Image (cartoon, rainbow, N blue to C red):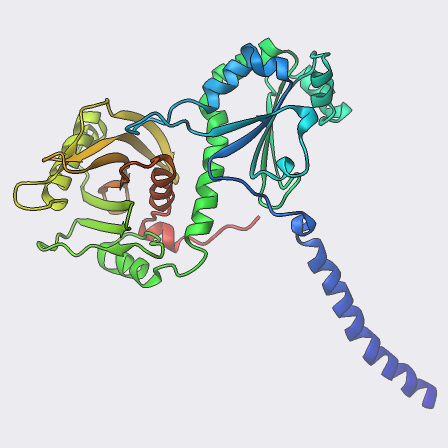
Length: 371
């Protein structure tokens, strides 16, 4: 009897300890990147690693045209990204922890730098690259640091990679652009999100938008039922997001002319300094339009320059026009920035990150899918 009681006591003690140990092991497996250093670097910066001769040649020119292309809709030329070239033999631990890294390699490059670049690929990867001419890119998270995004671009030869890049410039550039927007959203909403404003927009206006700390809803004297203005009025930078809507009646609303007429009507009525001064469009550069997928909806993106009618203020804007089929609403949502004497790229990306949190009531209700 005594031995049975001893065994029972041991079981009662060992099982909870074993459960705790197993749970700790499972939790330890949840995120291997925990042991990595934190990725560092400026917003919009890409550290590029490739053979120096290729960087100075035609392949390097194609990389520059892809990533250093001027972002449309800005008053002064600013590239999509700031590219920092690094020779593969000078890639130290500090540089290797950059937030965004780009590795470019071609399999037939027998220079010293070319062989070094191939060392980042396994034998099986090289075999697959050589057997599939359409395969030219691969991305990986947390390669050397936590929170890092690495993009590998590769080809059997410089010519093969150049051709793939020319045919896919927008797609390749969009990879890091999406990464930057995701990071901005994480930073904007990690603390003190304006949840009461989010909730009121959903209840009173029939749409959802995540409003970061520092942004406030602007009260308008005429209290419109179809226009909302959210603003962060800083000392040196003025950032705004507007959401407007009306009944969708015609496909012509998606034409450049229809979109700009809708915008002119909205902004001249609601964004004003006084009875005679209102927001309009600058004619310094043409507005650039693009067809995109906006959170699963067909949309027209527009990028251009705005100004007040008396030329007292101006800057870049970014907008999306789309329809919510459930409510038959035509939405026009825009972010615009006023930042005299400063680069505009970081701020226009910030308002883009906010705009892309927009949801319709049905999308808010939709349950999250789990993999």
